[in-house]
Image 1 (spheres, protein in one colour):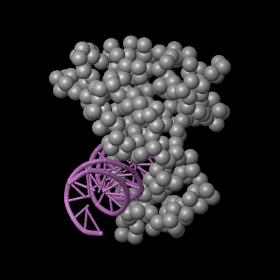
Image 2 (cartoon, helix red, strand yellow; image 1 turned 135 degrees about the vertical axis):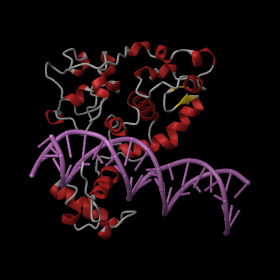
Image 3 (cartoon, protein in one colour; image 1 turned 120 degrees about the vertical axis):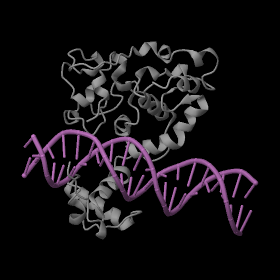
Length: 247
DNA sequence: AACGAGATCAACCGCGGGATT
DNA sequence: CAATCCCGCGGTTGATCTCGT
């Protein structure tokens, strides 16, 4: 694929954004909306490359961002999602309203990794460290690495639990990853009143920017089932492996 | 108070891949 | 069908902050 530089590097600012630059970017996007990042800097009078503008907006200036510490609930959700999706930070962020992929990625690397290591869990494989060391063929996409909240090891996976196959820790999730053509048997909770959800929502990613049915108000809020997160829609049953694919 | 080490996080970089020409 | 454009992603860097000595 042929590529051209994303911007004229010689005439762009780099490094931390100033208040003035932020204001320019915010007011431009308020007036014209997001998109066309390549031409935005020039149009907004910013000496930045489009990429930089996009990043600044997405990660810092967007009005719907939830700043502040992650809650314990968010922590556990991130861990669960990571065990399923691996380092697909954008997908994980799609399940955490107000959080950005960059923020989650940083939080993972600084906090959660350590947290898991303290529990005796390998953050890459989500399996007990001893076991992970023995089984080098494990991939992080394994859904079986998810464990139930009530089974969270208090002080790491010790004793017999540390030797148990991981999939036994979440029998209730009834996870079955498979590669298949689009299924006609979507889990019941993903359907609303006989209507159909967009593909993104069918993945349980109702908050994703890629959700095409939020306009219709079908899948616009996470936890729309009213009882917290329906983790990737797994309450309902089978997770189609297609949902784990990225573009 | 001064310093160094470690932690944090905003921002950059390079690349993959869909869309368009 | 190939070339090009552009967006978005994940990995990494480096400046700044915090904490212990």
